[in-house]
Length: 431
Image (cartoon, rainbow, N blue to C red; front, side):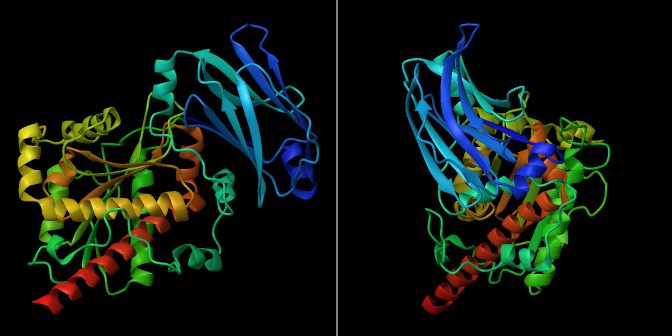
């Protein structure tokens, strides 16, 4: 569970850009309504922005972003459920770990107090079941020299990347990374696919199908198309040997089955379908990466139901039917190679989003997604983030955010291509 706040254009934010913000002390108090506690961070001015991550009933983490935060005092007065509080210096802020007594569960919410300087963390007592739902899939923050880059998500929508910043985003890492499954092996590559030369980029939804609608009224179809086209631009510029084919390049509706058929007609080696997620609660956040298979989690089933519901916009709705568990089981038996390659690519995406782009990832999952069913090649559906979350919606609508997301996808494609070609060379050497 993550809470996000920022203050662009405010007097306190403007002054904090040029002056140090001092954390004078930290205190706790029992709430007047008797429903929990309040943790107060006494700042001399509000930080530029802050983020709260609650990954379990026992751990709450807070990142305060500012070009200068000073915390010289050791005054920390905590009681109630708080058993420990640790601080970590970030290169443009401060990270705080709060350990709670797990005997009682509390939901954390962050806000500014009336003087617009102190940051308050409200702890509201909830059931253990509710806290398990709220923290499901949330990974704890690993404080390091790069984690403060997550504060970039608060940059205003009109911010753009310079050429040098973009080149840095797209640059090759100094060290190789392979996910837990390792690089692709010759056995995993279909023998009919000798080279990796064509990628299919699929912008979800379109036309009369807007997809999910954000908290501010933005459409999933527009974000998906903008990011998809930007990925194509990066590939054309930095991997010109790789041919890019789109399923749509404008606001056109294309049926689920037809998207896969386009990929087949274009002889694609990899199918990448780009979407945004949604949830009834506005706090849900993070990216997810799906490859075709039997969904094994509640969130995967929800994504499957939502993405497959596009069929209602098709004129011949009976041509796409809900995939059965038997169909998916048969697919898994007959397409082990494609599944392994799809999972490999999904793990590369997971790495690029969480480590390089510093975006929260909810992990790699399987689901019976119609859009992946028709494509006779490895494929992954990307949920960029939650359009229902106001902060993620703003980020995904901004030029800056779209550059960050597209660069992460580009880098995963580049790494997949390298792994594919390495395995192909090994296979040829062994034949």
